[in-house]
Amino acid sequence: MPDSGVSAAVLAARLSALGLLTRVEEHPRHTSVEAEVPDTISAESWREVLDVVAEADRFGLLATSMNGRTLWAVVRKTVPTTGDVGGPGHQR
Image 1 (cartoon, rainbow, N blue to C red):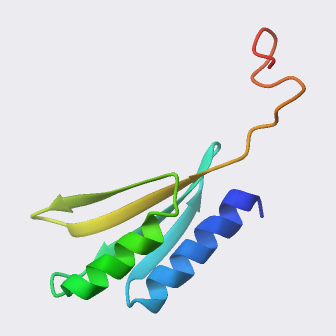
Image 2 (image 1 turned 60 degrees about the vertical axis):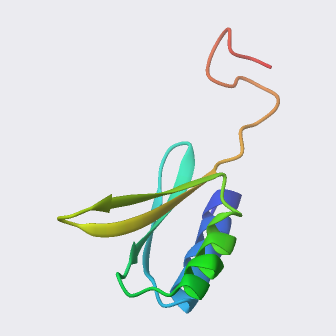
């Protein structure tokens, strides 16, 4: 599992320990973690959740009246610093 996958798995485990149902997905350039946030979450729990997702590269909250609240976090995959990155003309 790439470093981003390990970091995302740790984030998911910490969110699960706070009582959130999580899922982790691998993507070509990042690994994402999503968690369903219950309506009854306390202010203290919100602070703990924000402490966890602050370790991700990006995070946010999607809230809709139909699907509730979904917290998401993204951990970028490491990009090689040498070699053929992105094909010809995209080398560093």
